[in-house]
Length: 348
Image (cartoon, rainbow, N blue to C red):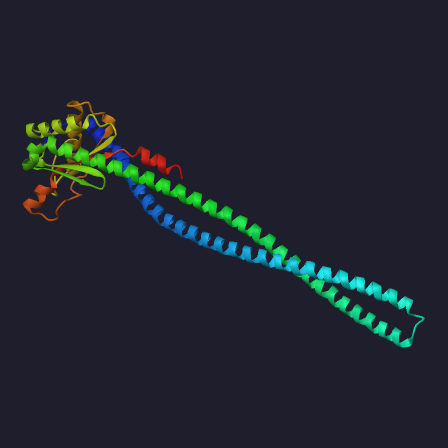
């Protein structure tokens, strides 16, 4: 293979810049994956919150039933209490009358005295029984009222927890909808972009160019036969025309990140000076394409990243001529910026 000398400092600068920029691009890809993972995590959490909400609603309905039963029991006990008090008052009045009659008849016959005494003892016993029954009813009523108060407090707390759960569920559903809307919008934008690129590059499809959409990005892959002579990093006329057409589609898309990856086959490149191997060659080729894209359009250089992958990301394994032909390529990977998604995720 022929080699073309290039100044050593310039090549080193290109290689260093491509490494730094590639890390930034990979960070963007990692953040996109984080968005997808966050959406996947939120779905089961929403399902769990919905189930918890249903459980809380069932428990609150049960507590309402208990509340109604206790209220009815309390009303019945209150009625019994009033009836016992009334009977108690009557017995007390009878007892007092018997005492009066006893005093009046002290001077009477012994039999009358005995009869009145027996009646008095019976009245006293019944009065004591009524007092005991009244005390039991009062205790039961106090217990019922205490349970009713506690149940009311528990019911209020349950309502608060249920409302918190409902609000939390609504907030999560809203976040999931926002994420899905943003991701759907990005996917639709990528599809439209892919179609525009395909229309602009229709004439180059049979000359070693393919366009593919996957993982939320557009991949434009160009074989070396469309771009470079063997061992060269100077783009030929056909390749320059294809890159100009691509640049015109991309120049009005400021929300895109564009990664240019140079790939070689596994045949060792024996160069000289600053370009010594396939690593250097792949970086130089990626950098050459970046220069054409920026010089032939209004693309912002900040959107572009040049990276060399050497022979280590092969499309096809093996040493056949066909495999090497496929592996010698340049991939232009176009991805939307994810600033809005990142801002949404930061609201957690």
